[in-house]
Image (tube, rainbow, N blue to C red):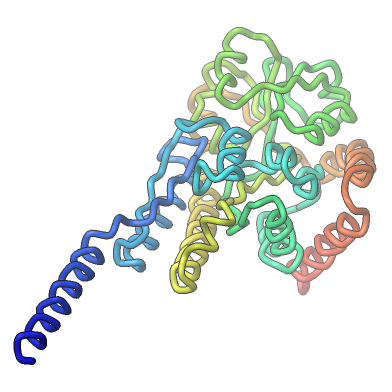
Length: 342
């Protein structure tokens, strides 16, 4: 009996030893994230905060890998990889995301937001959350909205102040149908060009101009190939952080909470960094020789009147009308709330 007892105890100790060893050397969960911008872009800085938070809070159980400058593919390719499960996470502008989920077209409505505060209020509210959740049927988990900023026009022809100034200008846009519709309505000739080919396209003068947030205009050195920068603010362009739904659902509840908390931290930090930098970027662009002009609210209203209705009509032809109307109503409500008392 003693011998059997010792054998049983020895077997138990051995099993526990192997179990503990397995736990000690368990491979961390990979969370590779595809980013189209450089490490110094506000979006990337936000994701660096995400990496630190998630790895620390999970005690190393989740290992975050950040891949900058489209190393793993462009925005559309990266989201396709996330959807298929060959990549865990990626950020992308709304334009490329509309390829997978047309509801994201509501983010491409021109001149929808008058300020960052109004945009953030809608995105962080029920409608913004509904838009993120809307992709789960496609195998994508929307986590947060990383910052990219308001999009502005640069070109080599003339400053843009009103609709007449865009007539005949050949302008590079993202590969996004509603971005193209906006510029068509404004009298320009939109030409879709991938982000990775932007600088070369401008250098070779294939088009007259392009449109991007200030952070991107600075990062890709548009001041070397463009003369005018007009602060049109025609589209607010967040970059949703999307995860593969199956990958996310395999995480423990605690790990899921950590990833969601880290995503919101990244979102808010990227917003702060982007907004705080914009005046400095304008000063730097001016110092580099670009002629930067602001567009008055009166002229933005003229631009809005010429393009917004046409784009909304196109979106309603592809997206549930009730969702579009609810989105627009949320913008009106948030605008009233933000402006209350002023």
